[in-house]
Amino acid sequence: MFQEPTVFVLGAGASWHYGFPTGEELIREIHSEAKILLEDLKKMARFGNVYVLDYSLQETGLEREHVTPDDQPFDWRELRDQCKDLMKRLVTINPLVIDYFLGQNKHLQTIGRLLIGAALLSAESRQRPLKAGQEEKHDWYRFILYKLCENCVDSSDLLNNLVTFVTFNYDISLDTYLKRALSSTALFDTKDVQTFLSNDRIVHVYGSLQAAAALRETCASESFPEPEGTQAKEAFVKWNTIYWRSRLIRVIDPRDKPNNEQALQIARGHIKEASNLYILGYGFDQNNNQRIGLDALHPAKQGIPAPHRVHFTNFGDSARINKRAGRLLAADESIFLQQGHMIQAGIRYTEKSIRNVYEALAVDFDL
Image (tube, rainbow, N blue to C red):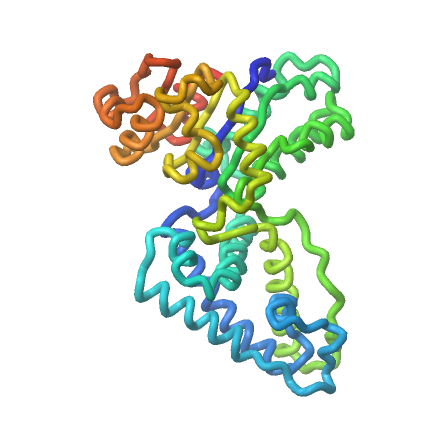
C-alpha cells in the first residue's frame, strides 16, 4: 500500500493511454463533433418544439414546460450559427490548444464546452477491453490497483493508503476504474471502497464529465413517421446526455481557471504534504504549476515543505519539456537535457523517464 503521502499529478498524456484525445487531436475531434451537431440540429428542427435541447433552453432562459408543440416554433438559428462560427474559426486559425482558442473567442465558450464533452464521450464510448498484449503498453491503472491492495489483510486496510490524484483531465476513466476494480476485489467492503474514493481522493482541478445524466422528460410523441422521428429523438437524447455530463467542465478560459479556487486549494494542500510525487503525462505549463502549487518545488522556495522524491515522464525526451522541468525542479533548464533520462540528484531525488506512462511505471519508477 502507499505508506507515505503520495500524489499523482496527471496531465493529458496520462489519459491518452485510454483513448482520450490530446492537444491538436482534440481540436480535430471537436470540429468533427460540430459537423455531427449541425446534422443532428437539422433532424430535430424538423419537428419544431418537440426536440428542443436543454442546452438551448438554458442559453435562452426558457423552461421546457413553456415550450409546447402548439407554441411558435423554436428558433434554432442561434445554435446553428454558433456551431458554424466555431467550425469556421477552427479551420481559419488552426489553434494548437483549445483552451486558448476559446479564451480568445469568449462567445464560443459554452458551445465549446459542449463539444469538448462530445469529443470525450465519443472516446469513452469507443473504449473496449484491451486485446491480449496491449495491456503491457497501455493499462497503467492496474499498477495503482496493485499498490493499493499490496499488504492489505482486512477491508479497512484500504483506507490506510496515503495517496491522492490531482488531474487536469476532464475524463473520469481513473475514477471509474478504481471504483469498479476495488469493488470487484472480494477483500474490500463496498462501504470501505466508497469511503476511500470520497474526500477528494481524485481532484479534477478544472472539472470533469459527470458519471451519469438525469435527462428531463421530453414531450416526444411516437406518432412521428419513421425513420425521421426516431433519428431526431436519438439525436435529442444524445445531445442532452452530452450537455448534462459536460456541465462540470467548469471553466475553459485559462485566465478564468484560477476561479476554481476550491479544487486548486485542495490540490495545493495534497502536494504540499506529499513525500512522493509522480508527475505523469504533464507538460509543466508555468501557469498550471503555480495553480496547483508545483512552483513550491523550485530551489528558491525550499522554505516551503515539498516532496522528497519526484518522478516525472517526458515521453520521447522532448527538449521543451526538459527545459520546463529543469527550470521548475532545479532552476536549470539544461540539466535534463544534459542528463537525458538518467537520475538527477540535487536538492531532492528527482527521476525522469522518457517512456510512456505505463512503461515508466513498469520499468523505471519504483512504486
